[in-house]
Image 1 (spheres, rainbow, N blue to C red):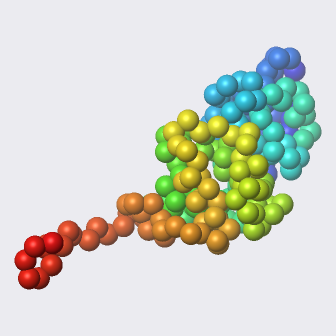
Image 2 (image 1 turned 60 degrees about the vertical axis):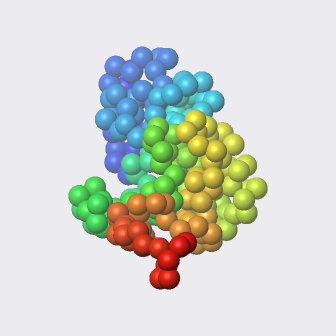
Length: 199
């Protein structure tokens, strides 16, 4: 079958979609959008979270045919969602050639919440959705919103820091080796012992 849907603001068609094919497979393999990750294929981990008509869904659980005539936004489409019409190449520093980043994406980088990066796209979409509904969430709200997203690298503290940073209520400095804007920080040389001898 053929499906037609709007993905990240552009109309796309996919031909020869088989009846059991997931939206995730269509996005990754047919439309070359690898942001949503294929991890569990059971809707357990949240790595494939995308927006479908404005609601976050696990793309691995959505049959591709269910996307017919609908609107999908992936992690790749978030900057355009926040900054419509922003041309590629308007990022800063390390991201100058990668286009603009969504504020949530930038916060994840600045807080050092990307670890291996496999779960990050789903987490970013989940946080984007949370902040659209609640711009100043308390920690329990953040934890509840991210309950469907698994990260096997961390204890989630850096992820919480990223959300706080995105809301402007950050209680932490950027990750070691980074500064605001995600650029490598200048290292301060180690200082010798204090004047007067022993430490």
